Image (cartoon, rainbow, N blue to C red):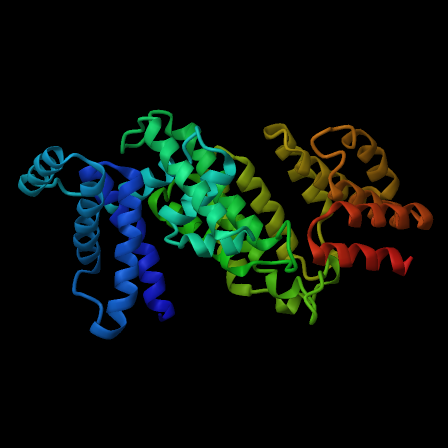
Length: 400
């Protein structure tokens, strides 16, 4: 299947699913029907050509499949009555954008765990198959099938209507978090042999672009997209020839992707004055400072510290606090960073995380404590499940 066709099907997937759920209900069964319609298109369109109205083609095929599936689940009389009612009903005009947004909210229903929200979003809105999602998260396909099935059942049992929720602003935060988690797992994989899973980070960016098109005036949506683009711009320089991790201060900045940096800077520059300022906008602004610095030595760490301090007023995120420690150390010296780290390390949410030990090692190395730094690097390596990060941390310890 060509890249253009794959892109078209992924763009159409949430629109078709939204159309079916709006018209017929049965989110869980409709989602299965849409997946089968997408599979049929992937098999037929390369040989027969893309129909004049690919969306209508998919809705027709998926509707037929939905009817077949429901026949197996419902009593014959009830099924016949319902199908007859569907056939005679005149469907109201459907807003594709609204349907896609509603689907995102449904996939991020508060009754679901974050892992289930991510899996269901990738399946229903992203158009990925269960096998693709399982491969991305390094779990057996049967495990991912059960996770997605339970998620769809939970949404069904919750009685969620196919409409924008009343608490849309609150729920939008969950949607943005899920999209960011998808991107982040692709950009910095937490497990497995690879540092990056490009297909996941690309899907996160695609979903963020979709959200930005649906909500062009939302500053936090723009901030999230900007953050992803500014971060992903560094991807070509993050790994060496053997897939080893290259820290930002050692990266070849000529490999960074200028188009993504320009787009990200434009987005955040337009979003910040609109307000209100949120966490994703501030993180994007920090990323922009990094990306616009000609070299690591010329990074404006004082500005980054100031941005982190504003961010800390908005969010109780331990990773933000840890990044603030690093920024303080770079701006004011390792001793100041270590003093602040002593306070941050008492947070139970991050006190045993490998990143806490990696930061301690870095600051101890900066301060000249070679023995302490080496021990901290080794401890960080023991605590991470990412093989490239383990190799990098062991290498740092060996250098000392």
